[in-house]
Length: 142
Image (cartoon, rainbow, N blue to C red; front, side):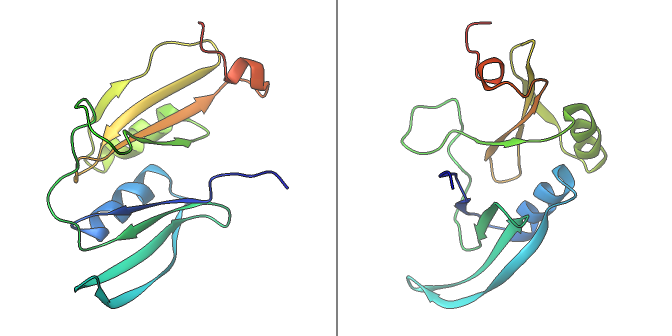
């Protein structure tokens, strides 16, 4: 078995807004688990795992404020990248759900990527690959 990223854990003000964003982007993702913690370092929170059987985003309520804008210099993650089968279909789904495209990635012969800022200010990248060859998918010279 190879190592892989199973999940990322994020804290937000409104967990339901994040769940709506992720499931609008990726309809096959579901809330695969969740619960409440009465005292998470002095505060009650709700938590949810949104994804599929293999990977997910762990979402915790109880966050304060917005995420630091991805263009600023800070310590922390800049974005979460998720591979999807069809970027244009994703753009259409998110547009219908009221989300605006932040920006597109550079043109590349073997991939297409787009970026969305969700309501808490977190940046998500969605990538569609046009090749099964790792050397083409991971080409950074184009």
